[in-house]
View 1 (cartoon, rainbow, N blue to C red):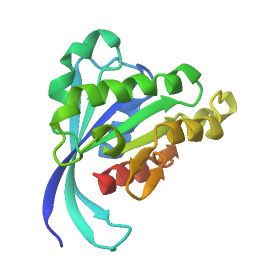
View 2: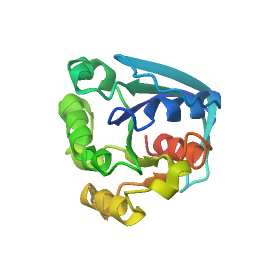
View 3: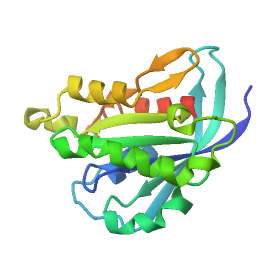
Length: 193
């Protein structure tokens, strides 16, 4: 069916992993090398996104509202309003920074704590909510300190458990700079939302 809906996608991860760059690359097709900390939250909308259902091949016209939250811990109290109503969440780490992968545990828990009871019809939200994991900065692959295997292990440990069994979280290695796998990661989030 070709109906239109709006999906809210929240991007979480440590400060400096490239959340804003991923959002800008996807929404506007641009990238800037300058780093500017996001204060509070910021969101961009991308209209007329065609989301294709893998199973049925149906295509839906969707508006993606992409929310970028500040990675700095001190803004965490702003949390609940950003997270409320989220349909999917991108968990972003930097392939050159192992701590940023370790901290995805914290971000995932923070997100689920904030939206916890607010996800309708999901039973145990923590095992059902659509998270997509993105390892950013593939343009710096020569400085990589997080292997694809390490990230895959994390995705397995955070697996969503469904009636059909355990499914590792989807994982993309991407670059906001070159745009590698950026479109695919957001598509996957929209598809699972």
